[in-house]
Image 1 (spheres, one colour):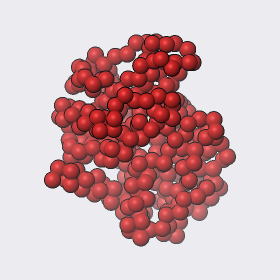
Image 2 (cartoon, one colour):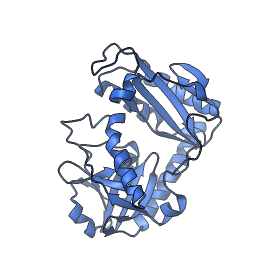
Image 3 (tube, helix red, strand yellow):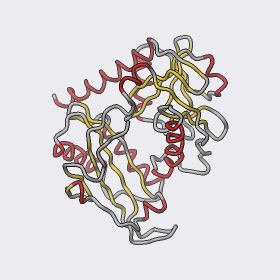
Length: 298
């Protein structure tokens, strides 16, 4: 969803290299390596009822992503957890989006940057559903992207790295220009991969089918949804899915921290009807994140 308020002029504070700084003063130099060469990793987390859902898994993945890009974030997962909790408290939000990001600094300019300082910042703001609420309930419309997820031999696909999102931005912009909410990306083999910021699930004969995450992130929300489905006795099949198979699926939904669980009504020429399994998992996911908040607070 579009947000009318610029992100560089909001109220509150941002945790920046161990200090809280006023939001508008959380700046970096224009010759920061991460800006020029995408030497940065990030996470997307959500707080519900004042508690951050699966915070430790997200922050551990942040550290692991940095290692895949060849740098060590100079904080432990415990320290990052504490920083996220304190930032949320200072912002005073109950339901909010949490964005930790780590990047190489401006000490060196060029492809090689071994001596750059590794920075870490955490920003938290109120961000509603990633998609328009009315559209989300009836199922979003999704285009077929021109760009494809790359062969993992060409990019660190297990990292949540900023550079891997360039083709996602291109694909989502192209889809929105045509009136779609998002785009489905194939991988380099022509198999169904994911949407631009969310994993995908399909329903056929009461079973869930989802692409194998061998060249894109095995999302934390994806794993949560798989667990919820299995708890309901719904069989989950992880496999290669070709686009020509989409005619055979009755339901489709996407999931991610920002998207949560969102039904899909259309992907290019393929049509789906949000049904009982999708609604059940939407409700179960919502109940799970709220129950987590109550359990942590108890």
